[in-house]
Image (cartoon, rainbow, N blue to C red; front, side, top):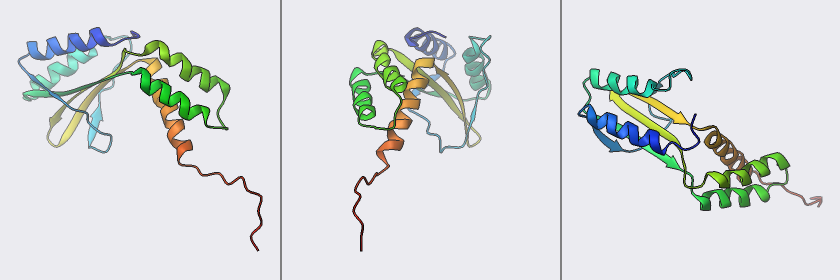
Length: 154
């Protein structure tokens, strides 16, 4: 898959509008009843089938969002990870490596509602999946309080 999904995003917008549908800029959260499109890697244009399915389902709009990596977010992630004593040096290097992708689109989500369920298609780069994994690690360690005091309470 491409390292920057800007062109794919532009193609999706043109294809959706070319099918006479509108776009609703929004993000569908995980807690919403949804079904994720199962795309195979050998079919790069599976998203077109997804848009055509939405059109055939009678919907007039698609929900669309994209995530672009911001350099400040990467710096903040690195800062959070550096404050973690229990992190491997490899993970920290991987976080620093993400600076190379600042300004690039790493994830696109398309969705449409049908009979109370959101149908989803997601395209994600490998580096963005690593970013999300490292964010999750940082979030997990933010919630842990470690007591280093050796004081006995009598």
